[in-house]
Image (cartoon, rainbow, N blue to C red; front, side, top):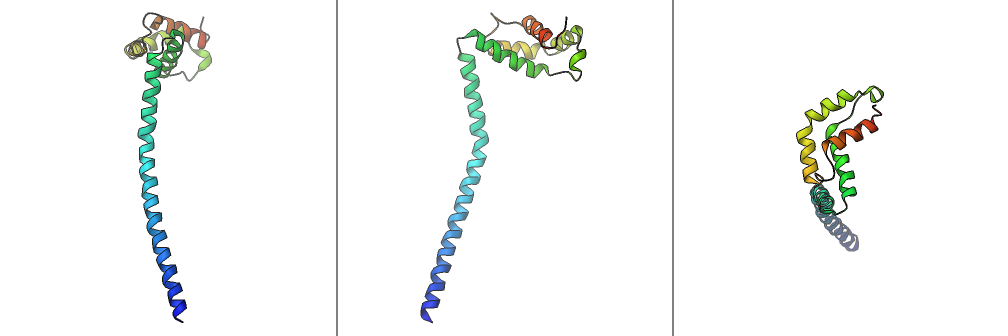
Length: 126
């Protein structure tokens, strides 16, 4: 009978230790998950700095266009976009667009007018 009691005590002790270790592991994983967003934001910053410091102007122009297009937004009627609609939206967003051009050091090779021309091609505007 004593062996059964000892066996149950050992199982109980091992279970308690496993529970404590599981709880510690849970909180470690929870802490890592909270840090994941910070790590993701840090990686985005590093990638941005990498593009900004890139000496290849074509790479900077491409990332600049992508960022500007994101700020510019889109149109619901893709086929019915008119030139004056694009012009009006570019004027509305011009300060944000210029800030992107300055951030990616593209002002000597890329301008808002170039962006407008690329939008005309993208939206197939004559």
